Image 1 (cartoon, rainbow, N blue to C red):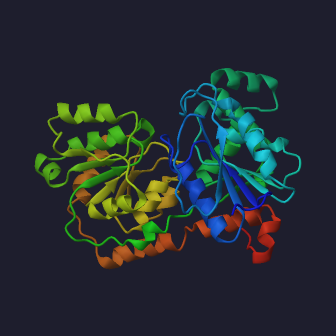
Image 2: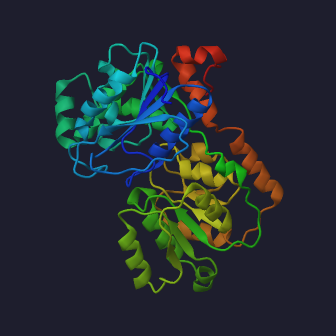
Image 3: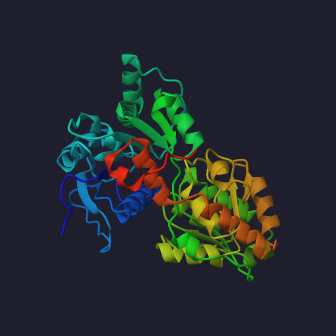
Length: 398
């Protein structure tokens, strides 16, 4: 039986975790909605897709799903008309909300949600990083809106969503400062609520047992450092490459280039492309390899960083954006884009054996700090939402 409308919580997000185009934001929305629903809230998530797209949903979802029309021929970040997606989201969300509904928008699709009059608090939850040309923009001037619209209209939609929300949240102090600087959000209407972690990554424990291989997982895209991972790997001595093949688990626009680069270097037998992995498959891959290499160039939070370190696995990543906040004192972080430093870290860390005590201390650090149930309570408490009152929700931490 479907829960009755209005919902306690409605969350919006472009695409979905099961769409052809997906990423950390979609997975985060799914985990947050699941945690809130499992805590007893009546939750609906409005994702988007083109009408002719078929997206199969898991049978055991603890929340309801509605679909908004994605205004584009094919969903992607660069879809030129995506700034118009606020219209179908507004139409789809309006009948789901009552005066006490907590409404959480996660991107440019939330630009018109402030127009729903009979609603409760509106939270804009930013899960992205933003271009430098937005820094210090004066959004009180019409010329700013026009200039940004003709440069990247999607950011006008983001500005509307962030500036009209009751509260804007980010997953890290880095991304919050960037959001405030880019869109002029006052500190009184901004807060950090970190992501939680899929329990799968707590359930499987990494143990040193002679593992082989280097794992990169996620979108094979420039901003994730996929090409840098391959370039650093190719600088290793041939015998080390043969002992520890590089596995790319994921897909994206750089796949053909990565395959060609490996082939041209004569390393095609040492570089494996597995495609996207399911949650259990990914956990198994993380703990089956010698270490994980994620040299991202930008992260507003870094779900993959957290997932890797929470298992106890060794990680090599970068100091880009929010990664140091998430990693804490764990993993090896080098300057973003420094291929030589990545190669040196690989050569040093591949032979290193860590003790069980080191691994357990790392797992405990992340287990104690990141929980989707805690994140859900923080959203409810942040806005003084009625749905949070029966559980005596504590004030957000940090």
